[in-house]
Image (cartoon, rainbow, N blue to C red; front, side, top):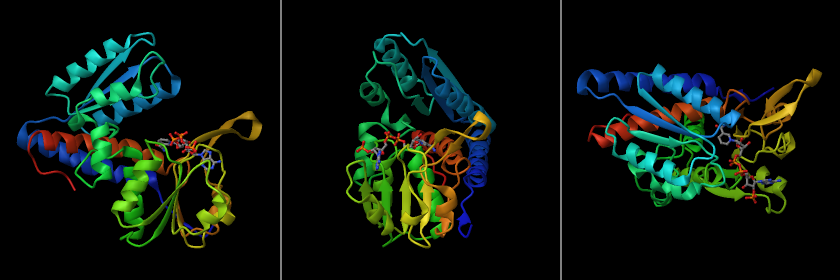
Length: 293
Ligand code: NDP
């Protein structure tokens, strides 16, 4: 392997330490404890793991964690009423409704019912519009984590060719907006892109957010490029055990890339760290205080 490994786990620890320091100052100097409310509807096993991790990490940095669970068959009105209560609760600075929601609920309606100032996932239509127009907003956690790692590794991104593979509302599109904001020349590729290999070969920065195990082979990577692998795919490993792989074929890509994130231990840990950082930001804004950098 010739690429530098971008260690998301270590980076996320540094972000959490910074957040914890900011929380301590808020508590000691202002008497304010930032609070994050996480709402889980139903019992999806993956969502339960995410929610548990979020709650634990929230408490570890000294913030208040509020967990709300609704049964899988709860009516949409019950969730909307809960969101309204959380919007009005001054001890709650961030609200996250864990997706996906069961079919009787309209996710867009629910997300847009969250107070945009408390929308720490950055999915509310007004935050999406603000990000797209370069106004101060809540930025979705996964692309924010990717951007932080890119800036840390590359310094200025201005003028670089960036190719984002995937155009979802939670990763691909906001990632493209953030890279554009940092003056990259951005291409967004998707399932209808013609000759994806040639498109990716142009890139100084590749962000893969597809959800297809190891679909980007090493020979698509321009020598020296920086590769951020957002994908989390469970595949059958040796002895019938499952293992996690990204959207990029790590071994071959690491032979050509200048730097690359591993899976696991790359983008994943940064996502929750950014959620905590967003909650502190929301708390500072709500109280008219200076934001952490
Ligand atoms: P979505 O399924 O919402 O979007 C996938 C995107 O990939 C779509 O835009 C789709 O194109 C595109 N795509 C599918 N097949 C191809 C193909 N053959 N060639 C090019 N593009 C293709 O996924 P998400 O954005 O939600 O997530 C992507 C991955 O990132 C998943 O593995 C997910 O688990 C992971 N993830 C990881 C997070 C983390 O914290 N590390 C957080 C969030 C997601 P089209 O629009 O044309 O269908």
